[in-house]
Length: 72
Image (cartoon, rainbow, N blue to C red; front, side):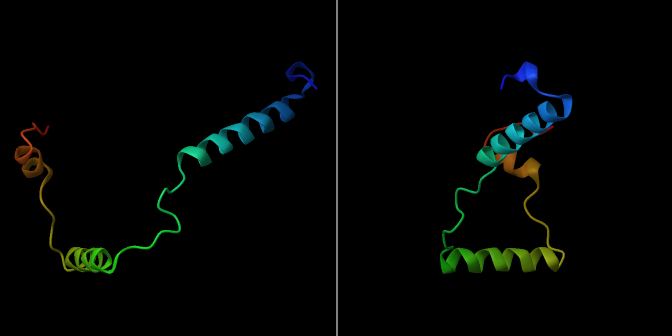
């Protein structure tokens, strides 16, 4: 069967399926199935707790300045 033989609905379904396949390829988690080292997990938990307690991170302007960048 050729594209010219497809109905509008069949063509839409084919396009939708193709887009979904491409998005799945690009959006896959490369770390899926891998374990986080205990010390990294602890750092993440502590960071999340600080954020929950209202502590803010480093402002973007400061990070940019540290790397010699201009933040707008």
